[in-house]
Length: 306
Picture (cartoon, rainbow, N blue to C red):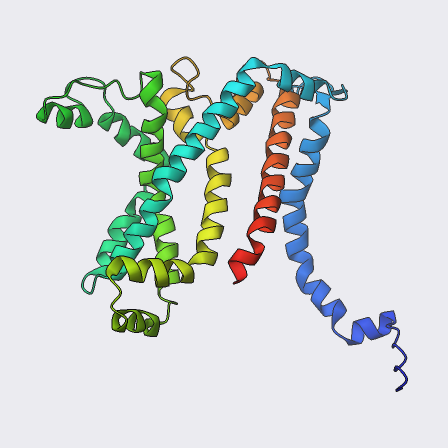
């Protein structure tokens, strides 16, 4: 039985000669910048979640009182329900649309660059400008763009943002329009990596367009689809801009989301908000998303690699 070679113990001098010090020096600026602008604020947020502070008067440690205050707030469960409703609608409508658009775009032989630029255009429009534009579309009067279209087919005007039933779907519609172009570009880039031989083999086997998409395109994009799915879940769980600018959380808190509730905790009072409660709810949301992401990647690990 061959004897095992004795393990060589690494000394600091060996680590330096092996390039460890050089690597550390190259990483130091990145670690310092990332630590100063990412980890330090996160650490301060964790500390603040256990404090009663308005950033003006001296902070007082209150233990878990901020978490208890947030959990006892009846508006919390409304915000959770609204955020989940927004995420569900965004998945139903916002998730497949960029994929379908990318597949159709990949089949275009002429002017593909122009079409891609047009599809990506909403992403580069400033969000506030986009909201002002869509407020004109959502005008509840008979002269609003959407209501004018409804009038052409004999339907009554709809109070898009003023009714609790239609307000959230209206926000999802604008959010899908604003973000679909970026996701579509990701899918288009992934489609360029699909070997054309697979489509040729599918055509020889007599596969239809839908058959090629189902048996070739989707399996080849499986890894990208899994990543964009979890990114969309995380993004929709943190929706803030649309309810803040369109409705302010109304009508009757039907569009109050978790991030909007955090904003109200922190900045609702002009004399200084409850930053402890705001950071406590922020940490709870971050912990949930981290746990959800870990479970998601654990459950889909084998699926994404086969």
